[in-house]
Image 1 (tube, rainbow, N blue to C red):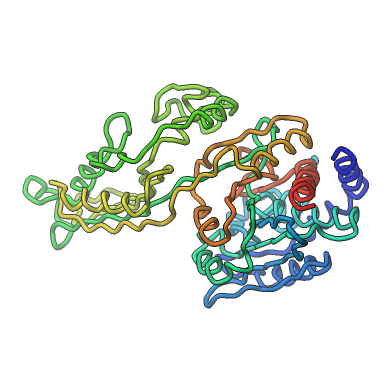
Image 2 (image 1 turned 180 degrees about the vertical axis):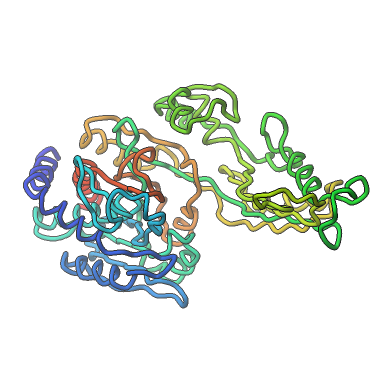
Length: 456
């Protein structure tokens, strides 16, 4: 295998200038799903390039959705098939005045390409496409059994992803699956995520008087804001643990395999506090492994938006008649989104501070692939060989993604490989998003090695 790795590396190094220029061209094409800017043109660009690689390429369509681009090479004999997920849509670049250069200019400064989508997710996507180009040039054809699925709605919550996966399940079916998103670790080590948290989205509201009332009546008139605050306070104890009866019953501690992974993840309390400019953490001053366990294995109940009463510049003395809050609750494996939503709704309806209106939507189930999975082990070994450093392997993504849907429809377990810039510096969803030239080129080498060993 050493010979093919050397040939892959030599090809990428010899063609580095062109590979970067082609990434810049791709990044200069807007594809903002929230406002439907440049989406059709980006799809055309993808289709042309994938067909140029000799892949059978088609646009998958479901009503009311942006098309998904699906490209594949024929399977040969008993060889395996590999499903690769990316997305071509990007976040809106606002606020524009905070960008140092045109967000779709793909300008290079100090070895970094700056553009919306540079890391999330066009840089990852394009590294995969160029990895296939490398193998085509070295082997005479793209490896058999590759299946690239590129959706256009990730940045708006992938509302139609399950419809795509269910409708085209037979075509998308594969033995293994990877999603390439995010980036390498802040230390420069390669990085993988073996699962993600589930989510329940909830809104709670209450109305007391028929209108806002002069605050002189506060001794008599119920205050909607206070009632909502009392409810919210009753949902968490002083240690920020969720107190909804039965809500945490299914929570399990990390396995021995997961604890071994946790012990390899760099996490420094001082650095973390400094990065976010906070002087205390919700979990208290824990460091290293304990901090990682808190981040990954504690279910959350987060207030993401709240409003009530008068919020104008000058004061207004009223008793608010209504109040509203939006919550997101992240779940870990063995919890179910349906059960979590049910228990939340029951708790709110039984509250002595009510009545309240509550809507809890079980959005996404938690999901996790075991560390001993064959493809995970292969990706970990090749990461060390290509990057020269052991990968950082997270049992969970700290956020939520719809990965639990994939095994249900395509068969193979899925995990995340990060090829872009580190989360702390990539500026994803923010001005001056970037990827370094080195990160992009190394990502091509890495994925080319994975494709070769898994499929050839």
